[in-house]
Length: 326
Image (cartoon, rainbow, N blue to C red; front, side, top):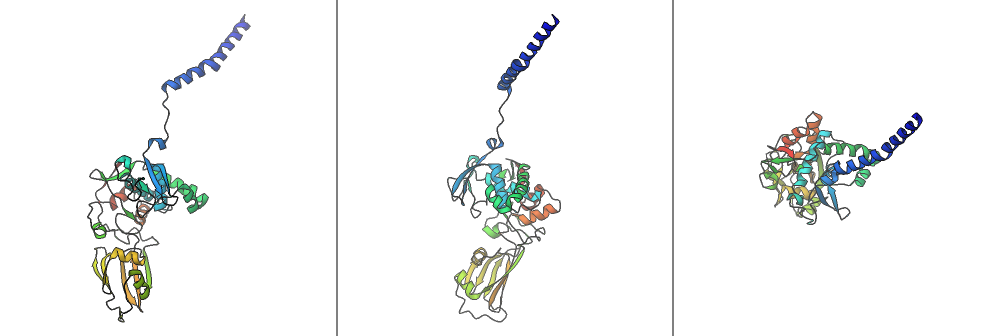
């Protein structure tokens, strides 16, 4: 009798374990468990036109930001500098994403943004990252950039509650620029600040020499009939200079140029330059790299090296702003 009861008990136990419990669990899951969405499904989408492949990509915002940070800032930079770049890039993108009421890409109407840095922000794919850093470098740097993006997920920069245009550049050369001294329009959060943090930049200073024939060709100015005095004469004169020393207008022979136009004509790193004539050559020394407005990227890295966090970096370069979740 005891043996029979034992057999029945074991049989009942097996039925409970093998059939009843799994059934209850499955039914319970169907009733109470909410399927988890991936972060890609949850986040804002970006329609990106890639000028290198001529393709339109659909990306999650945070994944897009990783490609921007990888393209726009050296991955060797300090983590807090990469975080500052991530927030600036996210703010720029958010202001243009159509689903958020943005303007979309100015050049590619089917897209929110494009990968052309002359139009929007630079962006590279994971394949390009591997080509840029090598396979081992890719795993190291992609993890670092992902950390910077994820630890600032959803954060943007606002001024008076509105998304800002967070312009940035490589190296300011000692001070950033007021927006009106570069683009004519005064923007309250794009004010000049002293920057002593970018001197480790390999683009901090550069000296170039041009023959007068070369300058004539690049600027469409006839310098061949100009007699250059021993000490430089009056071949080139700065007519208007910003408070930080950037050339706004200059006179070359008898022709007047905007500093920005002269910079691009000769391929100079910035409009913060000095020029002189030596041995019938135009010698130009530049300081910094880029337009000089907003966040100085090498300056951000220099601040991070001194222990500043990304919030301190952003509020230093963008005057009067706050950070908030998108």
